[in-house]
Length: 487
View 1 (spheres, rainbow, N blue to C red):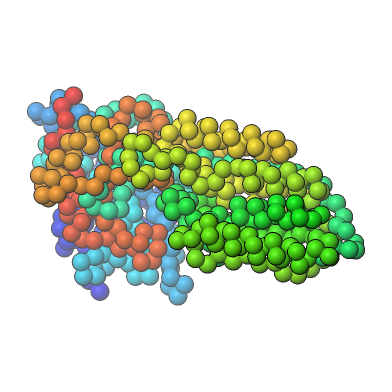
View 2: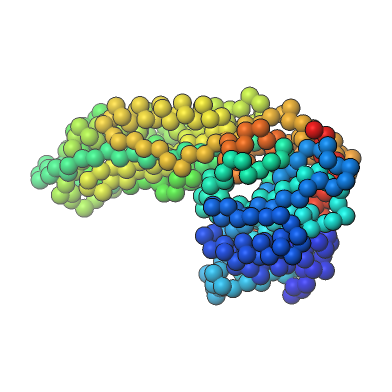
């Protein structure tokens, strides 16, 4: 394996990246990479500081003749996702990443590479240490713990940044300019109850399950309009309740807040004479949803099977209110963007629902690039579940980044890319979180663009970065700095 990354071009970027991959920096273990950045700044005489959130900030004044240019902020995050193959022995807290050249790409031996966002860090450092580069006022912001909560961006204080334009170096397809992302908000819902004794005789316990949904990322795949197993399950339970005297004993559906639920199940009790009718209703429901999701889902299954007897159940009135709220609350795309064709603007994911004998907990993740729409959706969900008698709390909120197709830096960078590479860059946005949304909320007058090299399979041991794309990305970055608009 060829591990000589410093032989690659541009050398100023790859030399920095070769050092960065040797520094353990999983999320929440970032002291060593912060120390590296501080020592780098000190060795190059660059003004710097570390803020209370663990972000590292650097600043350079404008070079002669560039004082009238708008100030630029280069932004990247310092942590990386720690994932490895099962057969790989590796300690992310202490071991350096074993990066090597594999044809036209750089990858790692059995672990994540950390090109996300190590290449962004390296590019920013290459710029900050280039004394021959003509530039206006220049800042670099290296944020902490982006991968597991965007802690550094959330902790960023107003007043630190002075620039007019923020260049986020954390996108993963070279030749694309990102101009928007969604903000997020978690809904944490709790419907308390005192369990009551289940019927001792005359009722049959059944396990009702919905499985085989495709699921996916609740930001990126929400536009696919895939089935949500939690929503399907409660639609079915309501049908069964209309049919007979159904008792709800427990429910368990979905998982991670940012994953569209693939599976959900409930344990119910129904009068013994209604078991076959319940199975017929389930079969009819499967036919209905199979038709509804034709061309989207191809493996949905709905099963009703015998279950172990239940000693306790959720009180009937609580179960009825829960089912009504789950059916009524919005899930999926709420509104598409009018600024950018094909972009989801606002959505909700009914991610998790589970009972524990004392309460039913429901977790949702709302996303929107428009704060007011996110707040309106939260109001709607709160209203539905408050009417059902539930306690509703919201947490983890952060602002989105609404696309501005009239952005001055966007127009400048489109023209520059066309001149450099003879083709127009793709201008797009993502219905998921970027730090731009949070930073823009603290600095609302910033003009922002996100771009980067091509990184394949980030967050997995197959992560790799295309070497040629790094060269184009850095060349584009340098030209952007040299041609920054006048104030």
